[in-house]
Amino acid sequence: MNYLFGNQKGGVGKSTLAVLSANYLTLVKDREATIIDMDYQQSVSQKFDKAKVLENAEPYEVLSSTLETYPVLHHVLSKNQAHAVLIDLPGKLDDDGLIPVFQSADVMICPFSYDEFTYESTVLFTVVFKRINPRAQIFFIPNRIKANVKFEIMQDVNEQLAKFGPIAPVIPDRIDFQRISTFHTPLSLLPLVTPVFEILFESLWKT
Image 1 (cartoon, rainbow, N blue to C red):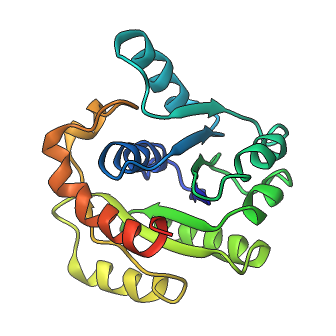
Image 2 (image 1 turned 45 degrees about the horizontal axis):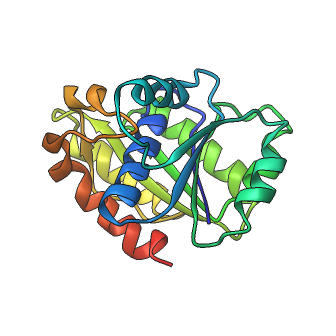
């Protein structure tokens, strides 16, 4: 199963959520997982390489990939349907190389925040993705949400995004998210992310 983490708006935490998801699947649910890091910043790959030096055997693999090399990785990894492939997408829509990546997705996990610019970017990203891959599910995660967000904004955005797919509980903004690694999720974050990942697991990852 292929799970894409994407949004054309930067700073919404898609790389962090990809790592947290892989940690949850492998360390909590004992599932096999691989992250494919396609983001230009390669932040997940850097975390993985750094952690490998300091820790024991890694719980999952992180593979760096470009849009050009992705089809080969997909061909190999897709042979095992029980294996969860988590893909951290580059934050753009203007490359035709994204089309086969979008087409290969079973699920798009789309983090967003409650501001007008991010909302508009999220809707555009969603519309483009659904045109390329109408069969895939989309799951929205309000991420890095500050406590002072106005309820009226949240309600309006949720109503619009819910037309495309379900919306997870809010993940609040916390400094501890900077401490995650590909080997470890800080215990202080588990109460914040577990409700979201339990929903994802029951509705998307369990099969």
